[in-house]
Image (cartoon, rainbow, N blue to C red; front, side):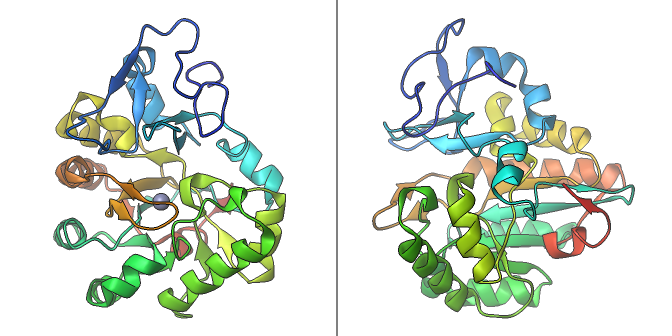
Length: 294
Ligand SMILES: [Zn+2]
């Protein structure tokens, strides 16, 4: 995927156009914040289907607040595995299962609708909740669990773990875990997918397994929610781990605000396409038990 886009916080490509790109297309932008944590180049848009299917696409927030495709230090599955041999990107399996995962919630504006849709399609997911958001909306976390979903750690404040020292990394993971509770598997998704050898070491010392993704729903929505959701549902392979978002708001040092209406709009199309292919979603901790973790 090298050369398809360059971005990422602090990366050489932030806010600039890579050679050969004719500009950028802001996806469904409706206000000061991008809805889908994504800005894609026109060139990327042309290869959207490939992008949606490709493993290990990284997304990162650019310094001007946009989020762009990132080919940064830990945006590829290979780089993540180099930092942490035990991390999850996807699973090799022939069984007709994959995992839908939802980050950054709970958010009362979007999470109930996501839960309603998952229930309608009998899909079970993993929610990587932001601790502060979970503490603010315990009823939504309880509903996730009551409906068979898995609730996992996305740090307490959506901390960008590669930007802070080990003690703070530890604090963010521990406090995130405290809100999530010690129920179920200890999965950690580092915000924005950023990790390092030292972040991995701290996570491991706390018994947390890092879980990333192999495809991203929001990366597929440049041609609209219906086309994107259906296209991704038709492209996904068994064992995939799909990143999506049921939350938009984070407050504090790593504040962000993204509308997720497009995600909610795309989700039924994704679920319908998966159902049509006989593929069902299970939580990540179940997925890793049915195949070889990659
Ligand atoms: Zn996040």
